[in-house]
Image (cartoon, rainbow, N blue to C red; front, top):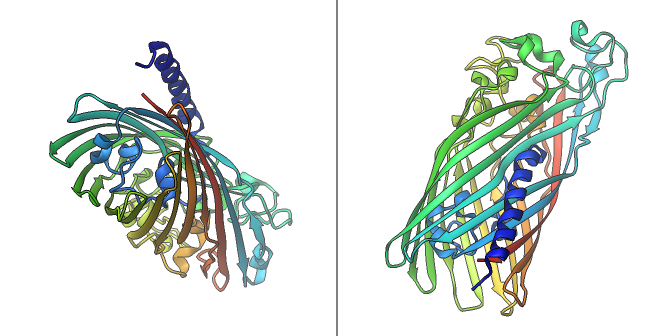
Length: 440
């Protein structure tokens, strides 16, 4: 039997780690939803709806928690997003805004945590804490021309930045979700589960003064420091071991309804930023004892959230209705996104497991005007590759290391701010995830 002292020490470490998750969740950045949560998902491009190898069921499919046993896992991801924005073709006074700039926020540490405990042969409980996603960009470049900003009342004679404001321009949005989970075996090989989703958002916008006069609430648009909002939703799931070689899974997460950002009600449509509903189905095939081949299909309802789905053109360039109103401008993610994920697992030896994955998801907008203006702050990856390994120690603990690559893409379209100009953003991401699992 494992010592009470050893369990207490591990639990203390996890409590401290959870505190770090809360305090550092704002470091999430790049894109929006993460490719996955936990070491298995990070290494197999998120193809885990029907794969039950860790305790992160609350972040993917609560039903599979019954197969996790008793364990604690902590992990951290070093996230390296690289983004370049460019404007070309603006004429007249707008020609000064034809320049390119790189986001200077390029390294983030994103922690995660999961715990599972089997109450009986049929009931398992647990908790998952993870950074759902983030939007973080900071562009410090300017025209270099004094007085070229679009809001001299706030900016004085400072040079204008890429968005006609002054000083550095960008967003800092982080979403932390804590998901307590309970799962039941309702029949041999079949389990269902439920995870209430408790969300905390932290947000700041800065350098957007040149557009604040288009807002319904101009003083609650930019440069008001960080604001915090709370919210809640629910995720439910089913997991079935159909045969010794086939398992299936399905999960649904409701929209997570968030409080308004009081300091930024003039920026977000309806003043808030709900987390979109999403759902997935998955299958995992085990052709022999050495391999798992997993396939997931995920759907994210971006266009059901006004702060994401409203068109960029709703308020730009005329300003009616005002940004921040229910029908005001947003990111133009006007298409729900379907993601296809393939994951491979190879049990090379009793100690070594190798994994790889590929994910593809069509963007939530085309290369048109919806890809410009606000949306250059929030580029989404289309193709992602992952690989990694897990190593089991003599004591039964496991070390996990994974690498993710979001393939470089170019999104471009006509500018909604400078008629006749073209804007583009070129993002790519490298990420390294390291985690440790303790069996209990």
